Length: 197
Image: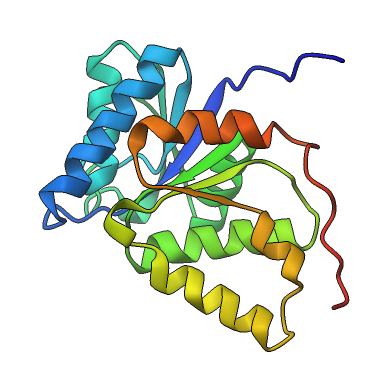
């Protein structure tokens, strides 16, 4: 039996608000340090504020590799974190595609509408069998439970196949994120999701 490929880059989706719960900011920083300690590159939205900034700053300060991807028009609002390598693109679509291409797994920390938009597209691509990369949510203090309930609601109403509920993992602690990714495996590990329910 062959050994699964080593994860080299993890994309993190998370909020950009400095007003976020301090516990969420602390968890984002802790995960940045975890990635640096594991020798895994952080791929993220390029900002220096909110959970995004906390994660990137902690990873960089711990000697980790970091790649930011920032749309030109958001550069002032999300304040590019200039201490790390940052690719500036023209549109949100380019940002999401570049982050997807540069990453072998995805981690979703607490976030708002922007984070939801990113993860919904990622999960939609998974639904269409366009990728099988691991997706892990940090469900800190039950933050993502309303979102999970909505997805289960679509399954209950036969608008989403039950198999879709297996396309991600949810963990409550930062230290459980990388083990969850390893458990899922890298691209190609998951079975296709039926298009017809």
